[in-house]
Length: 324
Ligand code: SAM
Ligand code: DTB
Ligand code: SF4
Image (cartoon, rainbow, N blue to C red):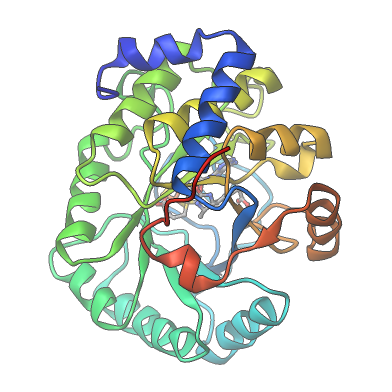
């Protein structure tokens, strides 16, 4: 039903209170209403990327002033994962600024995955496009999730990225599924797209069979020097609507309130949780930009009566809970 863009657009057009009621009802039918999954990000290879994604600080094509760093050593990655676990993160996500990994890179990242798994954390990696066999190698090392975003609608995509296609991204997602891993796939709002684009993007995610287990909804972080540095700010209520519609069209998926939280007041984040967001990036840095620190998020959770989900709850099929 929600593969149909018009049906998704109709959700966006609901009166705000009706939309929120519907999103909250859907949320309660599928998830613990006050539990939030916590993932911590680490950029294991930073900058110098060949691609031209118009939002990204890490493209070698834009002058963003970023200090490029080669692939990190195993012991540094493990130390960072241990610190994330000590602060309460249950999933550790390793990101690399590659178009895609080379064979020798996959071997080194596989070692990192094995070591992070051994700490008892869920693992996620985002390494760009995968070639045949690479998804299997990562899965064999114990990778639970692979993140690869569609980012926006097909129609808007050409305004954002030119060095690889929407179909390339879908092909990588297919390889991840075939290798038996869970899919983390979402996008970025506020890149100058229309509401119809946001609806078409969510319809693309809903049409994936099965849909992604994890759906990061990022709000564009404006990076000076990138083509999208001057994109007009998205109305916050429209962002909340997007989260609510994502919850309704992807009822069994974790919807992650992702990049952009640093610029969101508590009441806006509270509305996003009410709309059905139930996962965040946790820790003071995303990949290259700041994120609220652990203490700030702990205070926010306290204020809202939210609590972190244990990996047993967070990683498995969502458990149904009674409403009302
Ligand atoms: N190179 C890999 C790739 O592109 O798949 C992995 C890293 S890439 C930085 C991961 C995702 O981060 C992108 O697909 C995009 O959705 C998100 N992202 C990157 N820069 C962002 C920004 N400035 N604001 C919001 N989200 C951003
Ligand atoms: C995703 O959708 N958002 C994360 C994660 N997947 C890898 C990355 C956000 C990056 C924000 C900009 C930065 O820190 O460079
Ligand atoms: Fe490279 Fe990924 Fe940034 Fe695109 S989003 S420029 S592929 S690091």
